Each structure stands twice: as C-alpha cells, then as structure tokens.
Amino acid sequence: MDIRELVLYMRKDDSDRAVQRLTGMHRQTVRRYRAWASEHGLLGTERLPSLAELQRLVDETLTEPRPPQNVSSVERYREIVNQLRKEGVEMAAIWHRLQEEGYRGSYSAVRRFVRGLEPRPKPEIMVRVERKPGEEAQVDFGYAGMMLDPETGELRRAWAFVLTLAWSRHQ
Image 1 (spheres, rainbow, N blue to C red):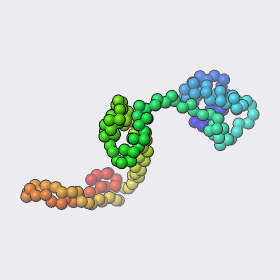
Image 2 (cartoon, rainbow, N blue to C red):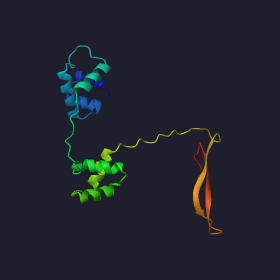
Image 3 (cartoon, rainbow, N blue to C red):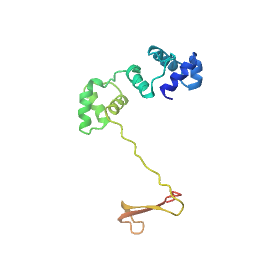
Image 4 (tube, one colour):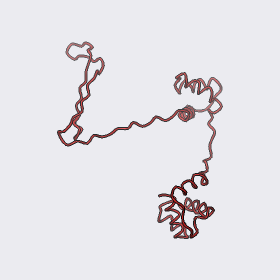
C-alpha cells in the first residue's frame, strides 16, 4: 500500500481501528502515520500532494527509529578479526586465536560477528525455459573425476553425459 492511499483512508475515517481493518496494518503503525500526517497538514481538506512528493516527504521526515543495539563481545577485537579474515583464517581458528588474546565469549558470537562483516552473497538467478513436449532438450557433458572400474578394480577417468527434456525435466 502506498502512503497516498493510507492518507486517503485516514482522511475518510477518524478511527485507527477502522483504518487498521481497511489496510491490514497494525494499529500502532496507523497511529504513527496519522501523527506524521497530522504534523505535516495532510489530513485537511486541501489537495493531496502527488505520490512522488509524499514519498520524498516520508523519506525526509519519517525516520524509522533504530532498534536498540547490543555491542558484540567481539567488537574490541575487530582489527584482529578483520586481519585474520583477510588472511583467509576460518572462524573456528579465529575463535581460538581470540581466546589466546583473552576473549571469553562463545564461538557463535564470533560467527555472528564475522557474518556481519562480510557481504552477503547475491542469490543465483535462473530462468526456467518453457517449451512444448519434444521441442527441446538440454545437454551437459563433462569430466566426472577418477572412478573405480568394477571389472578391473583400476582407477579410470569417468565422463558424464546428462540430457534433460525441457518440458518434463526428465533426465
């Protein structure tokens, strides 16, 4: 729901409960938006600004209060952790090194701290190819590594061939 629609609902109904029922928003959220709209004179009878103007006003004036933050027990070791991660040291080894430095916290705290330092990987995007039955098949072929030959007992190079039918996904 956009902010313009919410303001129109607030202009129509004086009750936060009624706006809650109409929008599905929590009543406290409606109350917070109503106070903001009233403060900026949006609940009167004058013409409502455009959606872009309202969005700009929201971005500039309706700041979301940040939740209270707990400081990590690893925070004072930030420089050491950063240096170790640059060197490619795993989290368990970092935890042990921090314990040598006097850290008494848990491994989970170190893991959470390190995960907060590193950027999250972007999800892989894939596109499903929709085709009619029998119209297309996708083929993949490649080296699968060394495998034991059941007849001779020797290691041999193995190759894999996979054909997937586009419509049924049968391989």
